[in-house]
Image 1: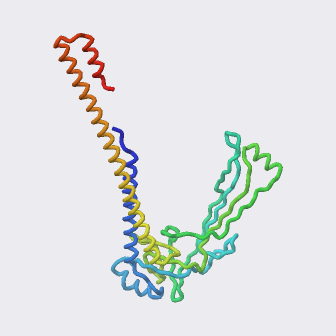
Image 2 (image 1 turned 180 degrees about the vertical axis):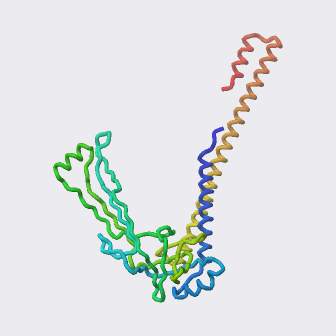
Image 3 (image 1 turned 120 degrees about the horizontal axis):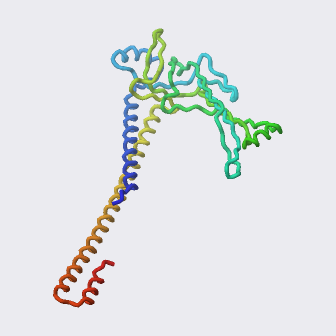
Length: 291
């Protein structure tokens, strides 16, 4: 019996989506239980009261700011996190004799300065944002610098089987003034500065979406995973059942043919012992062979 890999794969995929749905649903419930701070000036007082018992996980909102923001080289923006990448694009000669486009990373650089969220009542510093869920950087600049066309350079590249096209530079930035929602653990350092960081256990989000939008989005994905899981599981069960029924029917057909063959052979045996002619026995035997 061949294993119905298609049905098994669908069932396993359905189980994986079910687990993802449960995880998203749990994350949504956890976010619902997070303390929402309406004004940042209230956080220090709340921290003094609540953090004495358990780590305080909160949701805050505000605009990004920094004492010494970074001035972006290409976009001219001022940001608190800047990532710059440079890719060399070129054509290369393959074994078939044609040119195909490819690229190679030349530079990957990242800068960050201490930054905070400010809502007009107070400011709270954010630490480790790049490892948070929902964190994205805005593409501040994307430029393509064409390579020079000197005769010597072109000849050398051709001999190496390459044609240099140019360098693509991308600048991603978290600009000052960006509105963000941060969910994480609130702590206070030795000098009394309040900051938000990744909790030892719990959610850590840095997102342009509000806390209610984050909860709604997680709930939507949880429902989608649930329905997709159900559909894949039902389809997988159908494929497995179809395979099993086909296998049973095939075994039954073979058993019936075998029973018919055995009955006819027994008939030949009986006629031989009853004195039937050789030709008659041979004729019966030929009809006994399953078609």
